Image (cartoon, rainbow, N blue to C red):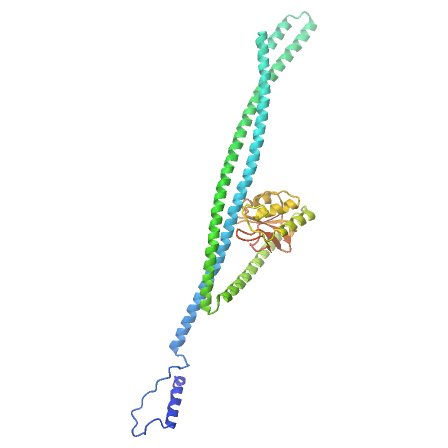
Length: 408
């Protein structure tokens, strides 16, 4: 209060010195001078209000930061969900290829069995025709000859004839019966294989529809999250009295720091898991030339877009990229991440060499692998990350600790 009164007292003293006030005798009753309107000293109420405003702005900033973090997480989850849908389609497509191949093979086996059945049936028909012409079976004819034998020599010859005739007849009839049964089984298997191929084709169509729907939804989410992010950055700039560009730079720096911390944690987790899981004594086979060729091809594709189901040349998805790269490395892999793991030799993080494959899954089960990338050494990889992004070189830990490692 003393500091608030100081300007008024100084003003009164200056007025007396300048003769601006009347004589003491005529002076009216003293009145309290009002503080100037531009008083530079805030009141207790002013301070409290300013503090409340600052707290509110801080709360707003914290809430906006939280919404930005949630939006980033939502964007990453949308990308993962889209890639899972793509790999589900790739898996359905791989199963369809196998089902069609098995159907074709079963049809060939059925045709061969039918040919054998027809031949056996023809031999059996010939036997029956011979019996019909003779009016008796070969066994009966031989028995009649046996009964009419005139000596030990004839008896021995006729007995042999009975055995031969009986064996031949049984063989012909057994062949006819067996080949007929085999042909029936082959027909049943071929029909089952054809039905399986038809179901696999239906599964591909369904997976394709689901992937397209998921990708459309993901694109809409990306656009929506982008708009929300810009609005949140504008709100943040207003709350901090800065600019959107400055807030964007600050946010990107914070996200980069968080990403580095997450990568360090993922690497530490991989190292701990490797330490607790002894490596097999046997060395895993590794082709330096094949790995070099695979990596060189993958490097040449950096910058091309992620295209779901893509096998090139204009774009690739994650398993399409690794499949194509290892085609150059001399290994044939299926265009499906889970199959690529099954077709490769598992290794540990400590055993990783350039050219190896790394895999991610949300469930920890190899059957549910949804992403694969090509390891190039020094904790770096080349990957087709997700729909809407280009093929790139990235940290091995950018998606967290890989669940599986394998060598083609």
